[in-house]
Length: 182
Image 1 (tube, rainbow, N blue to C red):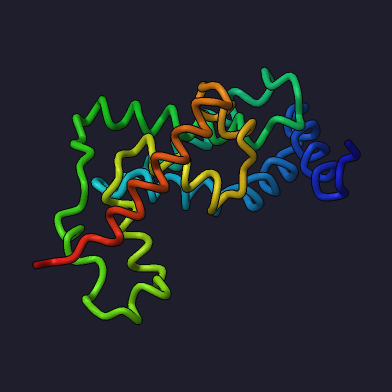
Image 2 (tube, rainbow, N blue to C red; image 1 turned 90 degrees about the vertical axis):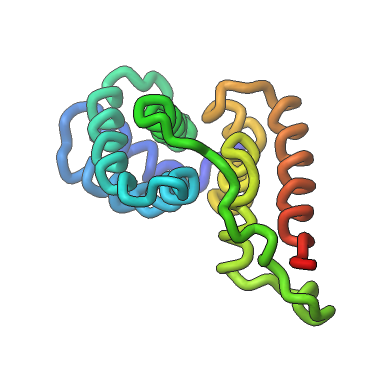
């Protein structure tokens, strides 16, 4: 498998960052910052005010851990693993209750046309209605476009477990989106 130009560029940035090139690290922050922010925001829906501080903590951990990363091509799943670990640590530390959003029952109107297309807000609320373990695999797979292998590295699970979680997460999201107020 040949690496794309973008992959080679990112690996070069990682290697340069590992030897102390601040401009390369800023470029990594520019490239991956929005992706890590989106992932962190979606995972911290029950405590959105803590996302900014958590992002700073994540980037400090990435900066400090970067010299120990042995394979520059694995930076993306490695960085998301750090974010995931910090998010779950924050859940435990602040005893954040991870529960579905209160208005999950009102996601979809009663019209048939509404079932044809979901808008981003409905999808976002639907993601908030499923457990974090399911939410994270859907966000990583469909928003961050990670492979099953990358998601397995991020979560520390096997590829088979990831396939299963994605299957059940899709089902849970579908059920959350199909619920209607009676």
